[in-house]
Image (cartoon, rainbow, N blue to C red; front, side, top):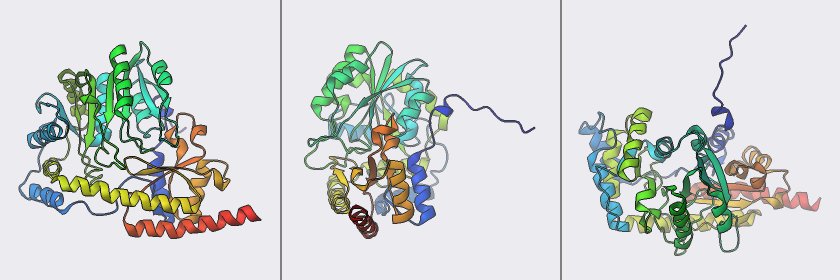
Length: 398
């Protein structure tokens, strides 16, 4: 008889990444990949050269476990310049293998089994599993779309806090909705964190990708929050190097100490030459960040027009590089059926909206597209999606 290995109860509580699965389907069917959020255009030449220079200079052995000093110094200088935060590179910063590991290391460092972690939904799909793997119980607060953008109900948020709440995860600008939390909303969150003695864990990797006058406000800059916020960031999205896996946490010293211990035994450290290049990236001129936002604004507007013409209802993002859409007009039973049809028959990959919600039914009429793509990629998507419009028109007139 063949032995059957027993898997953990934790691992049985969540599925593999739906986003990465859609990329696999896109490759299998030759589809235009508007599902996974990686740019298909080159990273800046200057930071690629910096990585090559570091390798040639033999920066190829272990860096300090919690991050090479030049990178930690560069991070501290960057947040001081942009946000007026005083950060000690020796006591507040931990460089990780991307923001994904940074989030997991943080959760394992601050959460005990039985604790609760508040998560806004729709959420980036890692947050729920991160809470489960750390032994916590996620409690969800819903962001609901409106003409003014996605928003939470303050009373519903307040009701989610209990004596068992250990942390709240705030992703701003937000994936998948593109929501940018306002100062007023963040003040509400800060007040509740202080009232209940809760840590805030903020994912701010899209901080430079903003539109229509939206302003990124780090939660750590609000009164009373520097000592109860873990800020997570990375170079992945800002510099189009999602494959480098260089991210970091910024946290109070006692929390940093715990994160560093977990990080050490999870991954030891991020790639040394890429840490050197990341330090160079953070020193890019201010014009780079202005141009970055402008280029993404143009891509956003183009994909919004393409999707609207194809029959989607679109929720305009204020930040990040994703568009959540309403697919009710197409008549499919749910988002999964629609997304599979889209990738196999039309040749465009998206992400089913149900993967961003605790209850799949909440996202059954939504799919997410990303627009961190070249003009050629968006043009190919437009051509293929025009077939979807034609098919829909036929189905509604037959």
